[in-house]
Image 1 (spheres, rainbow, N blue to C red):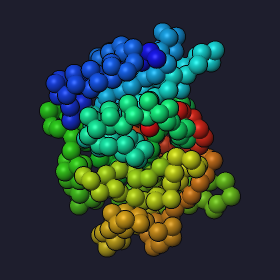
Image 2 (cartoon, rainbow, N blue to C red; image 1 turned 45 degrees about the vertical axis):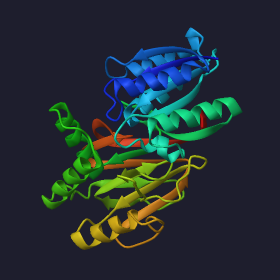
Image 3 (cartoon, rainbow, N blue to C red; image 1 turned 135 degrees about the vertical axis):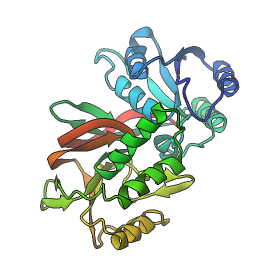
Length: 311
């Protein structure tokens, strides 16, 4: 088997020494070519070209942004070529997609799990989400968000450019600061889903294809606890952001069972083939923890069995 190993050298939880250990372990089992990312979406370009260069497997080491790039690249494999399988190793601060697959959050342990899966021939097909609008045609691996969470992602990215390290504490601090300053209260969002009444007056909204939405350290945060890779899309929107409602809903997100399907101050949707979120004016938007800018409408689609994962 020929494998392309895509490494993000800026991965926050690995060192050059640990990367060398991982490369050495994998190279004992496959014919391995190692490539480092050098600019934004470089991982996607390499993944897209992998099949044409004769690779059967793409492995990545990085955070959720690297995973998103690789997945989008693989799903743009030329139609006349067999798409390589994918194995993702954690190297970021959250690693939501990898942990949602049930993989260890330690990169060395995750490498061992991938090698065992390769030896046994274990793999699974996962469903993804797809966004489309005038400017977008991309896939997401675990979530997309309008409003508050995208505001937070934008601010964290700005601080990272200034040298801050991304961490659960940084995300939480930024989110709390924006809430206390009233920057999150903007009921301009509307959700339309087939067979469901249109819901307006939402302050922020999430679309997921698995649970959790994110992690607070080791604790999963679950606004859509019924969401699964094998099902369609789930969504969650908040119609109230006063302190009492927000504290209650956040507490339920952090509970083992997650947010109930019905409750005061929010609306949920489950197992949808498609939905549309629009806004009265452009709002911040993110997918898989990557800020994409502002949008006033996004169409979402479920893509079943989109990708084969070694796990």
